[in-house]
Amino acid sequence: RLTSFPVVSTGLDVVKSNPVTATPLAVAKRTSLLVAAPVFPLASLSYFMLEPLIEPIMKRLDTVAHDLLSRIETTWPVIKEQPENIKAEAKYLAFLPLTKGKERRDYVASTYSAEKSSCGKGGIITTGNALICTLLIVWSDGLLWIKAMLDGGRGLNTAVTVKSGT
Image 1 (cartoon, helix red, strand yellow):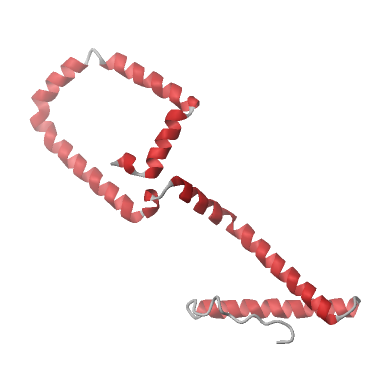
Image 2 (tube, rainbow, N blue to C red):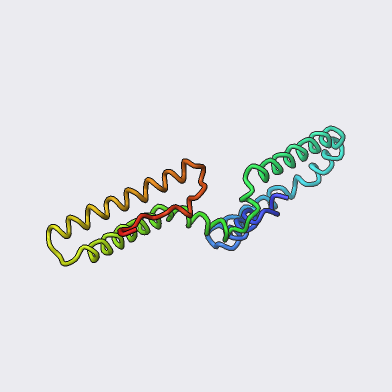
């Protein structure tokens, strides 16, 4: 059942196909078969003698393992998803601060350029006016976003953006 999870089966396939890990695995398998071959007849004989003692323990271990895998499935449902989806989601979350930072930078730059063009020709007074207007607009939009978050997310996407002249 463990190999039915896509993440586990893909991980095993990668380990088996990678030459760095496949060679030691093959050597370990051959060595274990070589070492265990003389012991197999004795082990099978002793297993049949000990089977009545071992069987309840094995059933209990199987039940515990099944319960543990069920709990893992309910606690982390992501384990049942395809590895490509998990990788894409992790990449999105890892780059989210950078993406949002670029969006905010572009928003402030476009707001400033719009304010500077609406104030008229360049000059120190015009530039200062555009900076102050940009600061007020960005501050107002931030406060509207905080208000929408405090309202429980209602109206978060429909928050009115204050622009100059409106």
